[in-house]
Image (cartoon, rainbow over all chains, first blue to last red; front, side, top):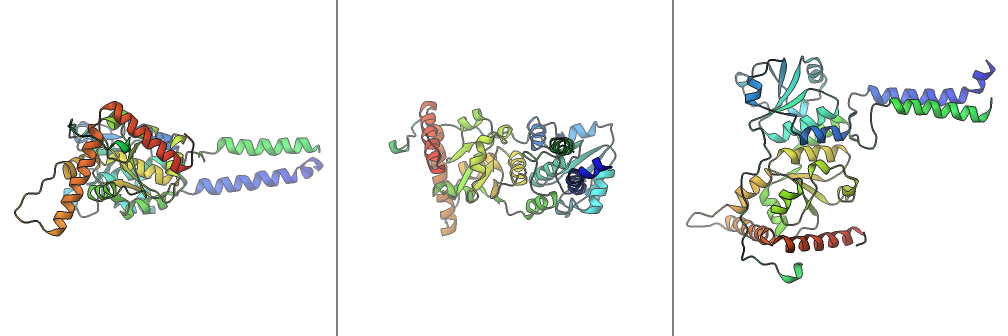
Length: 158
Length: 203
């Protein structure tokens, strides 16, 4: 008993730390993953899925249509839910994401929303998350630069 | 009880908590997810290629263009004034000095929109301020700035200004990227030294 009494300060400090960690951990808005994981997945393009690949899918999936909401419901994919990008993390939508069976496939008309949504969800710890794209490599340069062999820079630039 | 045992127990307790923490303070996002989402959805974090062309022409010192492509692609052609930070190397502490400059507008670009938006979200999530993307990337730059032609009989002052902006940016792009590799290396070396001096570093 006297030993526990003498350890009061230690127990108190560790207890307070535990409570703080618990509070931080229970906050759903705190990112828990390393940024490196997003870079690796994005770099090797393992997070992309083309329409052709989707057609051959046999595993369960749910498409999250994060367009601006202007597209009529009739143009929605099968097995899709419409969630506006700005409301992606609302409580009800988080529930949809959490309870989804199988892969989560993000789709948006603009690449910006889909890419940003993917990073946010990836860093929140959502696994099996992909972006539906029209092309397998959206980062391909469609043009070839032709150097002008007569071009010269002013000397003071060098 | 011995003070040393007390400290040991305290350290052991704190160490155990740290060991089981699921997040990694040094390379995890600082912003909360709802904060990042609201900035991302605001739509106020991109520039068009014409806006970038204007900045390039006036050698705007409040921006830093960041080319996210691989070094080989960067060497082949890049927008004048760009530095190369390959996306795969984004977290390298070497770039901290560039990202940390609060008043410098960092404009990310790749060939398309995707990599730039990933980089934007990661840099913003990590707590760096003033991040932007160039909409459409280099594909849009080529389409709008490099290949655009004025076709018509009359040109309005606004159209003329836009055409001149694109023409000058195109000229600068061609000049820099047409240099032989040896001169290009010298040019970028000189530019890096100039940048390091501005950052307060040494040669």
